[in-house]
Length: 471
Image 1 (cartoon, one colour):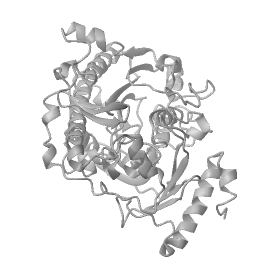
Image 2 (image 1 turned 90 degrees about the vertical axis):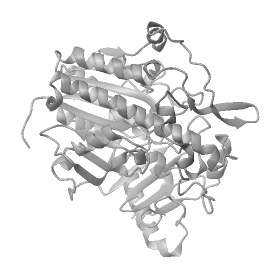
Image 3 (image 1 turned 180 degrees about the vertical axis):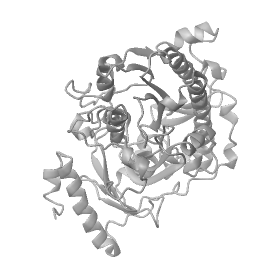
Image 4 (image 1 turned 120 degrees about the horizontal axis):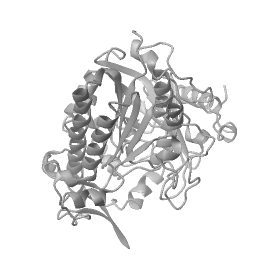
């Protein structure tokens, strides 16, 4: 490919968006014309994964290029049972390295990688959208929107939790709209400060799925069919899968209960997609489209009723771990490319550094994605990808998973293991771990799992090695 000067980087990130919400990824209902166009103008990573299915570990892994078991952020840093409140100072992030290379860095929106240390502690110069209250006052809107009239709650014996509803403000008063406005402001400011890195990090479509009109009523709840795995019986699966529905307060939800929430989630995704269009149009208006690498990704996915579950947790299903990841860079990334090789958020750091022509630290777990730009079927690319989970706001519960070919193995040291054949069972309804027909496959996956643990210096490898085959 032709060489180029160091690119600007516009990094659009969201929170808790499913892979299958994007039109080019097969969504039959949810409309995402901006993301579809972005994928058609660049590369779509069809088998991208989060290293951990919860916010802080996923985000820390993305900025360090290292798995949670190496960077030290195991669970959400804002929760009461946080293992570590801040990303260790010795962990180097791509933003610090870009800062040293004279990039101008801006951050808008969610951070969630430290309880006290925000973006400015990691090399960012500018932080936008710091006061939604002031923004709404300037618009003459109430600082706190009224309770949605159609609010849907998860219920507990002594509490309730908002799941979805229609926001009682115009879309201009929504926080995500504010983030987009601030992102465009910084893009205009940075047009004279190239090269720059700007991350616009939207809170949505994370619950509560509370969105303004016209997006709240964009999808008819009654026209949304149940997920194919909604009625999962969890037969021959870890008992925690059943228990988790009670933890989330949705154990009695029928599909009719879920439909309005799923419709709001779809509306939230389409609302965000329209905001992405404003950011991309700003690049065009400023004449810097061709000089800008655009990255779009989420931190992890969302159950949204799949397997009858809400949110995420100690269930390592595809709806949470399989994520959308798209990149565009005119003249550097061929248009309309899709790769089915396994990729991860840990690959974003080395990809950014290589694009900026900066040295890549040798202690990373991730790999620069550039080889897949020139050859989406690169035979030298990784065959196995690992992910992990260490716990969230309902307690600590560790698991690991690996993907290899169309198989998925989940190691649960405190429960039965899981093995899914995603070719014959894409919705993960049948655990094949004890199926005699999969004995050889299971052994092969266990061997590859141990290799991955050893290669990434997973501290569990010593204990797992007592029980799992090493060769």
